[in-house]
Length: 331
Ligand SMILES: NC(=O)c1ccc[n+]([C@@H]2O[C@H](COP(=O)([O-])OP(=O)(O)OC[C@H]3O[C@@H](n4cnc5c(N)ncnc54)[C@H](O)[C@@H]3O)[C@@H](O)[C@H]2O)c1
Image (tube, rainbow, N blue to C red; front, top):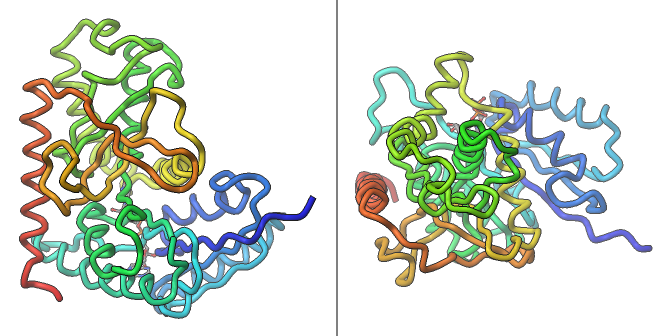
């Protein structure tokens, strides 16, 4: 049997903690399939090239059969050439005393540059997953600066939120995580996100038929998922890394494997005139499904009750505010 053609996977922030949990799993074949030969393209800032060189050595030392090439560097235009998947992880963290607007603008500079580099040299059908925060707005900036690439190829990662929500429901209902399906995260990857327990299912039944405690669902469950990132930082002293990496793998896997009939997954994708009345041109987390060809469609007609509607609109307002903070601030 002839080998499949090589797929090129770009990861930025290659010397960071998420990348250290991500690169090796991609290289085993977990993300794109155990018969898919790979090239890794890994971007870092010039000052982090030494630790990245160490990561490159370790990748080599694993002798992964699928990993045919590893390219490292700090020049986006050079490294983004012909990539089929771009996982944009590297971002500027919030510094002491930094306002949210400043953080957005500092990150905007990074994602403008990377969007332009994708636009000029990446594969024209490259699938882009933005992980670096604030990931929805960073994704919007990347997409806006890469007009050659279809808008439907851009995602902001809300899969970690989905996975956190699934785990909390499974714990509460004393069932396997695989019994939880149809878990939507609506909106922004932030504390305004809306984990939708109304439409999620446990062993095919509505969550509300299995977990009768509405107050727990509306308060503890939603609050735990919204604030899980902060809870991990408070406990570990560092932000989620292994779980973020694992969710990035899940996010791409969901695009390259067919979604089981009647199910869906969550991803931050661009809103259009048909997406639940959410203002157009926001990167907003919706329920999506895929035929496994790398593309997705938003699942429509999922009902919102008053509780969901109010919260989803608050998350939409936050994303509008993030977008407006940038307008005029960066070009
Ligand atoms: N969407 C999510 O669910 C989710 C979850 C966890 C973390 N995150 C975000 O992911 C990002 C990375 O997290 P981490 O823990 O790996 O951080 P980290 O600080 O350990 O690593 C980030 C790396 O990115 C590099 N970097 C910064 N600017 C860069 C640029 N312009 N080009 C290339 N590399 C650059 C840094 O040098 C650093 O090595 C953060 O923004 C974090 O908030 C998102």
